[in-house]
Image (cartoon, helix red, strand yellow):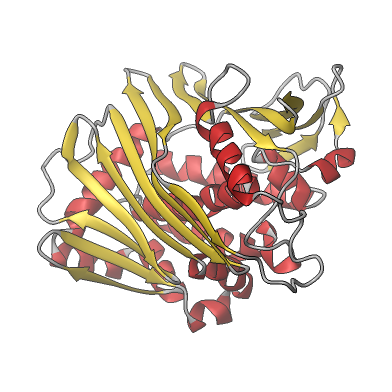
Length: 407
């Protein structure tokens, strides 16, 4: 179940985040943004080309299972770890090295350490992850400015149609998926549907992400704690992702939030069982100082959670990558204890990020900590169709379209 929720949050939430970042960057040319996102795009491609396998991708995101430990080096304490470092040239091409023992010069450095622990009699990892990169020209405050502008554009039919006709980004999304805007008394809703056109152009993305959305029902409410009218919602209906923006948003909508709250209800149906999670709450504190933006996030609480049904008697070999837990309710409870409270005295899953402008450029540092079970189980299956690399062509093409809007 650890893999269940981790996969959903890190990957499906990633899609949601990228759509928001992407559409919020469609308004005007910006050389600084272009340089930042070009460097990011080239970095992702370089990681893809140099990684040994999907296990490395997952580990770099903080996910490891016991059976894959042998693929990793051990540090002086005997704990499995993975590192990636490298430099970027003036053409924004990257020279990356896995597990360099002492990188003396770098523009990107990531290190993830998996510390096996015992929580009572349960085997877990305490996962420490740190990423430093020196991509310059974009900070979280820039995202909120463009998110504000996009919400206002959605509220104005003519402004949105003009944006749609001029933005390579929106044209790509609306060409790869069906998209349209609906309206009621409270919300303007922007919808993207993974359909046959998606299947033809990006079959891996259609199979992997589309099937996961089809098994999932999401309702995510987001608001600025200090300004509750600054809110939006993200939902899905099968393969359709829906972004709900308020009708007539305030003039300062999400321009400078201090604490953003996320409240989610998630339902996943797969292999004959139904998992329901209600009122899973997360908080993200923000600080925008003169030269430095800071983000601090962690889970706050969970309301009701339940798991019902029985697994299908026959499951294709290799489709599930961990034995079915004998007491699923107990397994489920333990996962959320690790996620929200933690067991090692450091709290549950958390992130701290700083984006700091300096006279010599920009330094961005992201540190995360979380605890996970060493034995993995996925409701989405473990066959080749579920590999993260299947989504790469879609995201690479999407990033190219976004860059055209900025240049």
